[in-house]
Length: 82
Image (cartoon, rainbow, N blue to C red; front, side, top):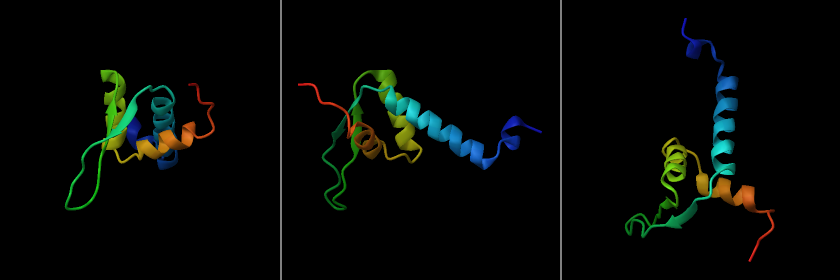
């Protein structure tokens, strides 16, 4: 039996959450909005910054994570430095 077959869905969800939080908490990318689709009136968020960090954010996005709102939620109560 493969190890992946023995992992319960609860453990799988916990691992996904841990990976998501680790990437978002340790990333310094900025999220920019593209021009979007004029027919559907939707825009896409694009990660900008260092290549590896952008790749990790793109990985989350391609796997259905709402990275933009995760960043907003995580940083809502943080002190702002000007």
